[in-house]
Image (cartoon, one colour):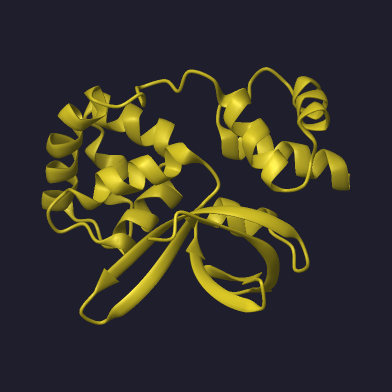
Length: 188
């Protein structure tokens, strides 16, 4: 199985990237948060989930280990496939999803394309116990460490990532918000 890819972004598509690795272009479906920050020509490390079924193979890419873990947990829920799991993570990143499961927030899940009330209820029931068995809880322990990981995957040194994150306001509480804020400050 392919666990990660390190390469250059060759193309940015609607919901995927083509990542060039040693002369081979891999199409990787990614979350909107990764698409928002990716640039053609950028070196990128993408953690992947390699999905195989009767109709072929697909790669799903993530910025953090936590994203992959939650994606895999979602796939254990009956009637949730990879595309639905990606849609869920686009609407509810791991921390938000964990909070939704803890508070039984069915409204958040029914906002996701392809998730009706029954599927949302099933997700809440199935993930309640599974979140207890993982390090993912209602509040992710350290957004800063994950944001540093994402930024170093994007080419920042660890010290540069720490420095720019220290300058961000205290009200940022997700990895996605932190990375977006860093990039906006860099471009602004």
